[in-house]
Amino acid sequence: MSLYESWMEKAFSKEGRSVDAIWDEYLPKEQHIYEYILANKLTKLEGTVKELAERFSMTTEEIVAFVDGINDVLPTPYEMTTLEEDTAIVLDIDFERLFKKMVEYHAEHLYQLPQWDGIFDADTRKRLTLEQKRSRTIVKGEKIGRNDPCPCGSGKKYKKCCGANL
Image: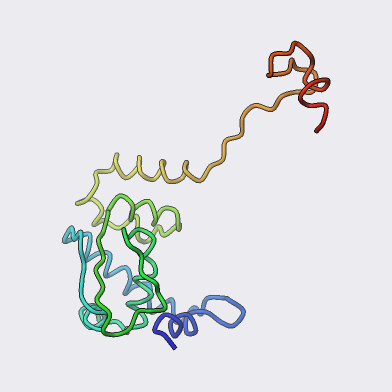
């Protein structure tokens, strides 16, 4: 069983629900890593899975969970099931993408960390938050009424022209 599979088995029940005790222990550790990255303005974090686990006082499964959480913002994502203790990890961090991903995941405890002040000013964080929230909003165009002129330019009513077959 891979480290990732082992983590998933611990963190989620057979029904797919989160195991609160595991997450209550993991989330402060995850937050600590992000605080470290942001406070030191690290654009690259590297080491083997085992080295990173030791550096941040985590289990190897927890480090794999951290990599899984940041994987979407990496230029080259990892295949999670292939990670082993001796796998070299290089996390190239793009702060803008990371911030937006935290907003997308509704991880307020992460995107509201005070360490972001050293990366982006308040206006930039507000702009990035709005950009991310708008990127998921679907805006539909104005609906054509049955009795409106057909947009094809025929001069007929929409219901007698392009809307006749709908």
